[in-house]
Length: 342
Image 1 (cartoon, helix red, strand yellow):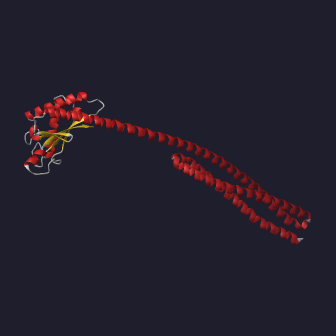
Image 2 (cartoon, helix red, strand yellow):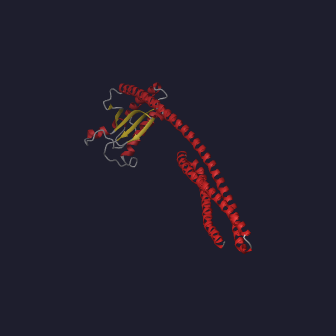
């Protein structure tokens, strides 16, 4: 009889570590589920910061959460099986206790110890049931979170599709506008070339007797001596007479150019490479700029709109003749008129 009781006490000793393992496993399950819940909340809050990156992160997290959920469901099932085993062990302990009680007064102490263990196991069993129930609730909550995440991903996909369609439409619109703008600019350039030809033709006719005025490419070139005294930016009477004809041609041209063509007459001043140092003109920059400005101001007085005129000085840095002879210097001292678009 004593050997039988000793064997049962050994079974209690073997049963206790298994129970502790079950409890540890369930606690780990709860901790892991809480971590998963926090991760899901974090990624749910972060998804609004960027559609593309949120979509990728959410897809990856759903895959991970699904795997972890399957694992935790398996662990929950194992815990339930172990709880069933605990209940069976508890029933066996109760049966042993009844046998010990019926065996007589000699077994009272062992019976009391067994009753104590049974009471402790019963309390632990109830606690395990509560933990298991809480774990199942967490699993349920995770399932709801996964459903919500999938809905958010679907909404993001719809938004991305809509954005792609709008982007394609915008690109097409921009290309169409670009093509139209290029076509309009090409038409304006061609029209401006025609008016430039008419303008130069008119100036050539007005100044046909002047050998010191010539057309070079798309520019009408006046030698500085025709317009200004040496080292000065004041127009000579002869220069004013030449500018009167130019102003007349520009005013006549303005009447025929359509308003949608944004044209301008650019006056460029150039000097030769001889240095100049005066209080009024410390360098050739100031002299060339002052001469261009003087022409502009005179044309404005003669009726040319100020908003159609541009003055620029280039000093000696854009020569038409790289030589150092007096003839080369004379060619480089010049005023150029160019009809251009703005």
